[in-house]
Length: 289
Length: 157
Image (cartoon, rainbow over all chains, first blue to last red; front, side, top):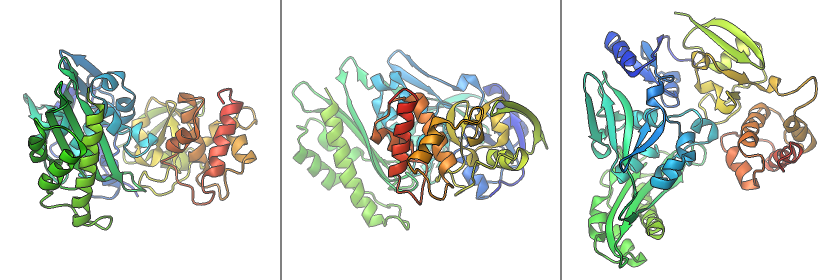
């Protein structure tokens, strides 16, 4: 399998890449290539021009500033999984990255490419929604989009053709008001490792053990990450015992239009969403302090 | 459109012009004649095409040759030193870690990346590290034994 012919340009800076994007309408950006190259080999994508941003150093690295974490778009899944900053301040992102595909894929695939590709079975989008991440984009101007608004459909995002996803901003989950607990769990396809259903949960407890804040997002089950905000509203102020979580999930986690394919029917996925949603909330609760 | 690349492969530097759409695995096999790297599933699932790029295991069927410009690559042909098998190669032989051998080059290079990161892996860690390398013959047990033997021999064990 070979990609269709294309012209290749290598960008040295973000502004250089933006200039190239302006000169070549319809061009695609190449980072690690682990979403784009498979699409090109299958001829599902046939861009006439590829702009390789894989060496743009300003897109690399993980930094923490004033209670926020900034993850450069070119950060690989292996780097996310091994990051001490993430382990200390946003462990759920490292946990999810460590479960993507396999080590060789994680060595090459990047968070920016993953998020821009917006595969519904990808692991990271649900984590970004559950943590309240903000996606930073640069085109003629810079703009920021909440992760919850960024994913607009199956393989579709708010990213413009003339824009670059530069970095992702994530709130510090372990701030002054205590450690939020977080957990990412998935039921994966045994061959590809893609999520048939994944669940990302973040839970903050009050001193008396009741729920101060919670978020839960699922991937694999719908075209865009499924935000289970209704479940979380039920939990706020409630004691976080297993029965309460079970009740809230059973009553309020309803995936309206679940994905259905040869691996799992929509009905099965909707049921998995409840099981994994419940388990992720319980594990996040256990990890909160 | 051809692009000039400069890549070190198994200690030798090659400067070549490549077509941008040429996949790394085909450059290694068809242009350099390094046919030890196999083409398996072509969808980045099976790991038969695994090589080390700057020391880390990657799937060469899902990378363009132009992306490797400036890097240093090790293929299975580059592991032996002066005719002596690498400890991983010897261990796969000793432990019967292969039958048909198709997955073996990728399996060994994925294991080489693991042992470079983690010289004393547990059995679970070995299995996790080889998750992206599929073997349809051995049932994996002897492969895991081989990696353990190599780890011991290389001083980690």
